[in-house]
Image (cartoon, rainbow, N blue to C red; front, side, top):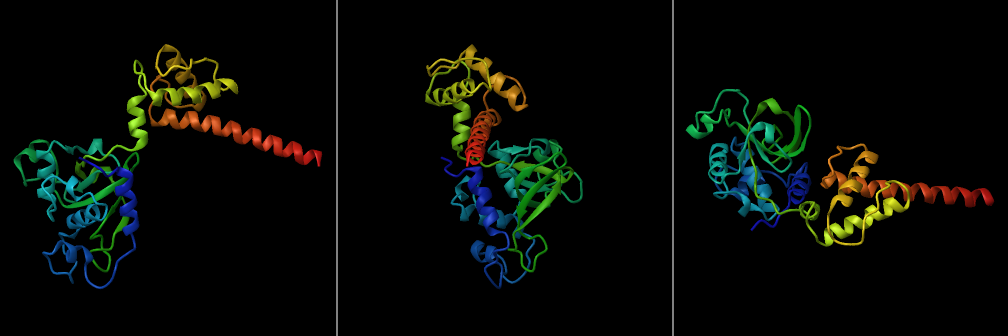
Length: 265
């Protein structure tokens, strides 16, 4: 069972950037196969295994540790955890193609149109045409020099996605759905009630733990006030928006009171 979240993997990766522990490749010393004094090509993949081991998440790599981009792609494919370039998201182990040619490594990968399997890094952020990554074997003095890079999406071959543990917010999002009734919904509705009380939204919600049409209507008002997608569904953006609207109001009132007291001397 997965016990490590995407956030934990990304924070561990960031902790390795610029933290080379000394002479010789620490990755290969740990991996135990290759010459520890050379900038081995396999270090990019072994580096991700090293990273996941550091985070206590090596068991989340299907088939176990490997220094081959081809093997890791096939293992994730067999596990049903391999995705195309357009589906990339933070936490993915992204395999890049530098040649742009269709891979010949495995017929199933080729049939999906995946390109050559040349390099692998951890995705930590996704933009319109690029992604931000952290990886090893990126041209440093030694292969264990983890670096943050910006890569073009057009260079992505495929994305390996470990089965991460869900974060608290992700669990909460899954629980706050129309038709359900639970404590997460009750907590969310308390925020909606506060927003109604201060005049940010107009719809009144009750004190029950259910998500009905009233909660959906109030949610749409929150989304409109926050200028985010208005669909009545509660995800991370809506939860954050509701909290921000309330906190901004509190900050505004606190500043107003402080200024009034100051004016009075």
